[in-house]
Length: 405
Ligand SMILES: *Cc1c(COP(=O)(O)O)cnc(C)c1O
Image (cartoon, rainbow, N blue to C red):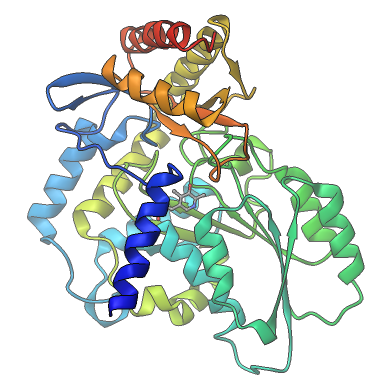
């Protein structure tokens, strides 16, 4: 144990020295356009609360009602005695919203991604007699990478293509076309979390059809955010209903709490209920959480106002931040990367912005490539114009102080 203690201490020291140690700032309020850090009112530009539903009155009412009616939780996994009508209703609503036949809930999207690949490759019969192949975008989320790590090596070939590089992917698919793989899967984030850019889903749908591959997307940053009705990257790319498997979260735009899901064909979802280990061996989300998510989706189906407000706020913030002289990565996602170059500038700027009442996350190597340190500002429908202006003013003052503009 002495060795272990030494190891842990040296890893922590190393993280602090290399400025990768993660500090957590307690918020003394609900999540929202403005939060309190201690007593300081602070404009929040770091949450995935894209539609402001984390503290929405209608959503909270639904959660309270479900808590009263259905209790705190099920104390069981789904197939033993852990299913309520709310779980079934939510799965139906999610499927309808994201454009798949059916869906299945998980305790998080991380769990959903960890569940999916092993459920297909490891849990099916005939182990050892076949190989599946996965084609994965280089910048896919950590949970996809971990999910793929659980696939048995002898049964799974993993190929990584360059970020959004359809040409390279097609070359790989063509190279492998004659090989006797059992299942071919193209795997990508719908919207990527560091840059807010989108996978070229129209091309990927076409490639998947041509090479008889399954198309899997993780659209955590897309649902509730992109597409005319906020139905995600598939809607934005004009391929709603044509993506085979879509995973997502209830922890971002769709109520900001916790929970995840996999959408797919009825057959796929039926299979996953039998074979997905984080589903069969782990409890589902509690009723209050399910009710809040359901209320969020119903709210969007009645009225796309939050999606439109988000778009308007994003356009405003992007334009103004560029007018101040900051470089951004162009796009229309509410993730607005403000490029600063040096890690030290990004660190100083996020620290000083917090002192000025603006909460925004700095990202630097190794999270992003060296020399591409940035602030990742995230706009919400919950922001008022006054809050955005206050944030922009602070960006101007601090940016000047640090010579960034
Ligand atoms: C946030 C995120 C996840 C994890 O979602 P949780 O529900 O919080 O586990 C997975 N994939 C992507 C792309 C994400 O952005």
